[in-house]
Image 1 (tube, rainbow, N blue to C red):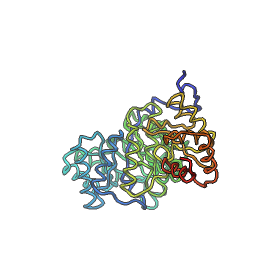
Image 2 (image 1 turned 60 degrees about the vertical axis):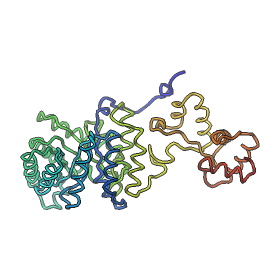
Image 3 (image 1 turned 30 degrees about the vertical axis):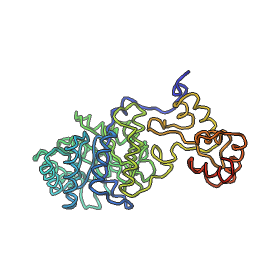
Image 4 (image 1 turned 90 degrees about the vertical axis):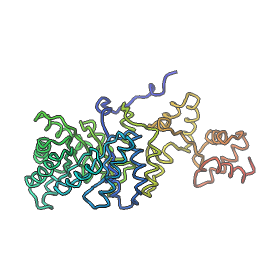
Length: 407
């Protein structure tokens, strides 16, 4: 028998070689800018850091040490925790292009007793510069002073170009050249307001990669995007395909305004493209732990980790899934889903409700350990057709049967 995947054709163009090498950063600092989150405890932050490492995230953007003494102490604790637990994930901390911000990271590195990375950011769009009352030379001079201080004190750094997706090619080119000349280990392109379309993300990334090639410099290009137009994930995939080495996002896409790139979805796409960097089986635990830690709900229909991501009650779909089960798990997974539930440690779930048919009822009774006699199937089918919601789980089905006098 052919493997189920061999029977499928894809119209999608996927650069497997390029995507399989992409690295990821979790920006929990950005996630906690969501106005509806609750600040997690230090114990929860440590656990989330461990889970991110288990999933296979390479970088953890942990905080802004210059913000307050409390924030600085939290950043030190997390950096030390990563070292104590021998986590492979690399800590990153934010600094504006202000020397006092860099000094806070220098002190953090000394106190933590381990190397960290400073993410030094500066706005480069004409709008951003106008609001600050800067010219581009002013901004790049601030950047140069901050980067020079980090370099002098042996703190590795990268440069984030805030609002670069709305900056002119001339501004982007100049900023990229300056950041490279200053010794940045990477340059992060920022779609700060989620303004890009996928074509724009592609062109913006290709432009930055091309500018580095002009000066013969080979450093990382990263992409940090937001989801204001609902295109955060699509833009991230476009940027990665165009040459971005690092994609920065948040689990569950939590973040300011409409959120960030949902890393759990990006991880699945990279794995589907051939990346072996990530542990898909740990994704659900991480996302549910995060949701509990910051007091947000995971939408039932959320891809990958939502409760209903692999659920159906529709008659024709359920019938096809039941038939596919006889061919094996791969067939069952793919007949009505573009994501293999089994790769995530999950299974296809057949619920029964007003849209269900006899095959779904039959399968549901078997899953309850009950004999699907014709009379029972018909009685439960009639009951479901009158319902406004699906029966959720074995207990609900048994309760319905008991009320019908059919168990």
